[in-house]
Length: 345
Ligand code: DP6
Image (cartoon, rainbow, N blue to C red; front, side, top):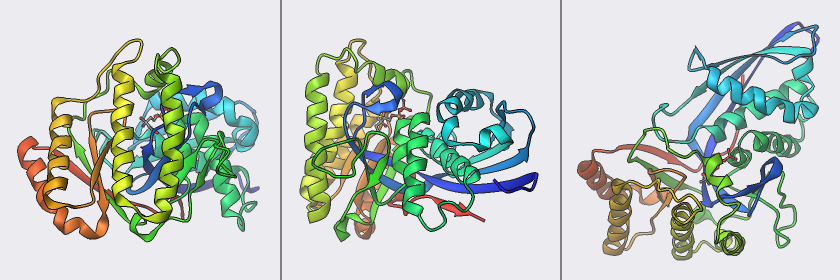
């Protein structure tokens, strides 16, 4: 941190959508299986951290979301900070006022914890070590990923693009349970993927992701699921290199449905899909068959549907989106592969 008593740091961090799903974790946010995600572009969090020198080492934090004090998320951050304070000396030297803003509407049904904790980790790490990583962006992003993971697991996958791998697998040297790494090489056909997010329902979920992860602990099918995720990860990474859309579709949809199958078959079964979710899935699959186009769906832990396809066939996909919009009167958020986090001046 600089010697001046006051300074400001700003970062933008994108959200991400998992292709291979992280569902189940061990202590300290260590994932039960590897996961692979695509980094988004339009869905991001921007954070502004105002730092003021203080004399007392206790953490001083004021957190505002969209201009308003947000005590619920401030509490979550205060719970997260002790776990990462050893890596963030700024916490003991400065009082923090954080202003956070999302590019997507609050009720859009897009999980904001990935981009929020991602942005927070980037800002706090940058504030702690000004200049240290100036010529080593990769190490900076690796450390930010490690810190973000302790806030929310999926947040660690927002630090690189277009795809990230989180979780150790002996086949991929450099893969790690503590942070995500970029995946490569990625074939050109997977470098620019459009993601049309169909907001089937934007109400608060009955079961949070964290509760869902916990239910994997005594899950009857946990071992098979974790093994399958490892197998899918290896297959997907090969596919990303060769550019095979057909295989990408098979794995992506299998992962989405398996995630929800795990929820439905967990010790306390629960269901996050809505009738509209199934209807959109069926419309996507019929359209794919009729038009013979490379597109597929994926789901996160909720009822909304992400439709993925090469951005350069967007015009051909438009009739599908119009049909979905007309039948369900759903809001659609348009996103695509992004480039990763960005420091703002
Ligand atoms: C279904 O990262 O939200 O979206 O680590 O408890 O914050 P916590 O969970 P979170 O879980 C994401 C689950 C998922 C799949 C994924 O993104 O891989």
